[in-house]
Length: 265
Image (tube, rainbow, N blue to C red; front, top):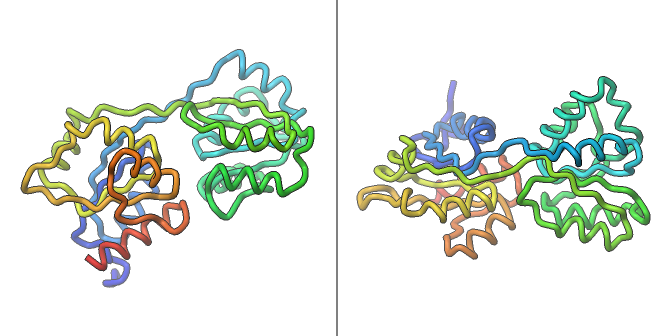
C-alpha cells in the first residue's frame, strides 16, 4: 500500500527534458512518488560513426590499455558495433574500463565487464584525475568513446600524463523542435512545479526554444533543477535560475533534491 512518504510528489507536475529514449528511468522514479510528468524531449540522441574510423579502431582494438566511456549512450552504441563485428568479448583484449557516472558503470556491468576506474564525482574532470592517480598512463594507449558535444578536457588531461589518446565518436546529440508537440502546448498553458535538466545540451535547447515554451500568464512557474556542476554552469551562463542541484550527479540524487525543494515550498 502506498504511504504518504513514498508519494511525496503527489499532485506535483514535473517537466522532464531528457531525450525520449532516456526518459524512462527518471520518469519511473518520479511516477513512483506520485508525480505527474510533462515530457519535453529537448534533445535527441542517435548513432553517428565514421566507417573509416570504426575500421581503424576495431582493427587495433586489442592494442588499447584503457577504454573510457563518458556516458551510457557511448557504451550502447560502441558495443552495438563491437558485437556486430565480433562474436567473442575476448576480442577486447586486456584493456581496462574507466567510466563517468553510475548509469555508465551499470551499462558496463550489464555486459558482464568490470569497471576499474570510476570517480566518486561524476564529471570528466574527476575521471581524468582518477585515471592519472592510477599511475598507469605513461605511454598507455587509451580509447575515449564520446559523442559530438563532449569537451576535450579529459583528453587533454590524459595526454598531459603522457598517454596516447584516440577519440572515437559513436553518437550525436541534437536539439529537437518542440513547437508542434502537444506536451509543449500543455507546458505553455499549465506550466509545472519543477523542470529538471540532466545535461548542458538540454539547457541550451530550452534557451534556444524559449519562444516556443513561453508560459501563459496563468501557468505555474517551475523551479529549475540541475543534475550537476556542468549543467548548472550552462544554466547560469544562459541566464537561467538554478533553484536546486543534485548533491551528486545522479538521477537518484536529482530526485532527492527535487523532493526536498518542493517539500519546503
